Image (cartoon, rainbow, N blue to C red; front, side):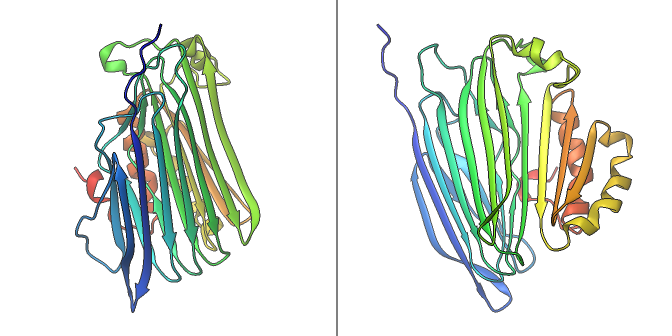
Length: 274
């Protein structure tokens, strides 16, 4: 008989509106294991950092988030640290994470968390849903680290479904799904068509009226040695970047080279600064 274990439940919500040139919080929800911190930053925008006080995600956990950006607002959401997805038992249901985002006209939302570290045997279903307008801007980052190379961890069993859904002016713009379910993950990632033996992957998506104009400058930046393994394409008002790295640190080094191009030279999020 499998003994039921305590599971975490968390919910966060943040609504922002423009007050003159500044972005201000008008509604805040924090429940269960979820917290939002607000570092002091220069400029007119608002920065929020998510915190999971349960210390990580295990099978059966449930986390929900909601972000609402009013017209003309500027919101950056990051995380306090990397999220860790711990090993599940064979009969455990996956952890569930869902975040919904609404972005008003001429508003900007940046979702720039630290990476997600998947431990051997972890199970996660995650879904980010975005509704935006043709004049708004959305920048998305998700970096995933499979196992801990420094600890000599060998990944065998893993169950991950990670989905991004973007609608612009009510129409589907992008459906992006990573599905990685295997009893021998290391062998799967070693295949040249999958990851060529690399242990970390990243996806960036920029949707804005200016996104496609950034492609030449971004490709110039991707020619740097630090960005080896990354490539970019742009179409339909959207720019997508994907890349591979041996583990989490070289992946972050590459992202620190790429993000300034996509963000117009803005300072990195507070929790990213070294």
